[in-house]
Image (cartoon, rainbow, N blue to C red):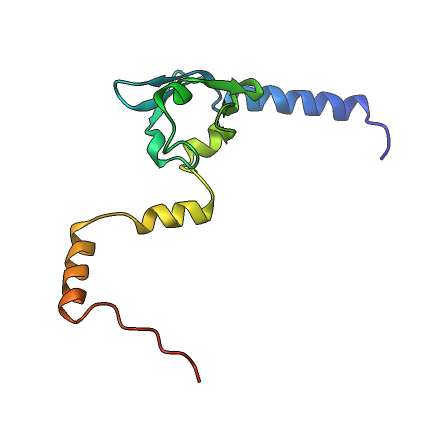
Length: 135
């Protein structure tokens, strides 16, 4: 790889300045035990809150463990040392609370009147049909 020119370096620095101003970064984070939410204050003066029970790796954490959250990466990440859990702030803002497999598993656990009615109707028919092996 060749040496970077002053023009390339200046362009990269300017790109970083623009990103710093336009992207949301966390300026503070805390666990609000009473509300049961992680509260993230952002560099654009917005506040983002989420319940830890929906986040992979935080669902069974104690109040003490949840309170030990810290900012990392100049506000682009949240880290829980004792839990070995890390999340990016932009990812959380986009609704990425875990891996695809974790989110699919959580979605399958969702209770709704429609799912409950379908389950009752299926039960009246004798339940889920048994799997037949392909022979």
